[in-house]
Length: 221
Image (cartoon, rainbow, N blue to C red):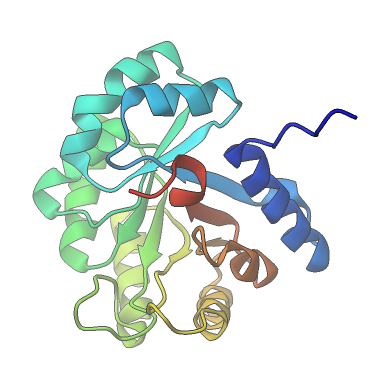
C-alpha cells in the first residue's frame, strides 16, 4: 500500500485556516494568507508563487527594494504588503513598491504617506498597528490614541481599511485578538491583520481577515 505523500507547508497552512474558519462559521476564502518572506531568498519566494501563493509580506523597505522588483516583473499578479515598522523617510519608497501597509502607527507616518501618495498619484490601503498589549518596546498606536490617529488619516486622505496587532509573547493571544476586533468594530473598520504561525487558528476564529505566516511556510529563520 502506497504511503500518502505529505502535503506541502502551504497546503498545511491553508488547511489550518480552512478548519479554523469552518469552526467559526466563516469561509476560508474570507481570510487572506500573507506569506512573510523577510530574509528569505528569491528562489524560495518563487517556489511558493509556483505553488499558487499570491500575497507576500516584508518587514523592511530596503530589503524589499533589493529583492522584489525582479520577482514582481515576472509575477505582476502578486501582492506585496509591508508588515514591519515604517519610518517616515521611507514613506515614498513604501508607496512606490507596496500594495498595502500594515504598520501605520503615528501621525508623522500618516503625514508622510499622504505626501508620498499625492506625489506618486498612488493610493495604498493601510492598517493601523495597535500596541494591543501596551508594551513599551513595541511599535504601534496606543489604544487610547487610536480614534485621533484614524481621524488624522481620514483628514489626510490615507485609506485605513483595518487594524493590525502583534500580541505579547508567551501569553494567550485570544483576549488581545478579541480586543482588536472590538476596536475595529467600534471604529467602523472591517479588516483585521492578526495571527501568525503559532496562533493563526485563534485569530481566524476571532475574526482575522489577514494572517501573517512565515515560519510555517518557509521554516524557522
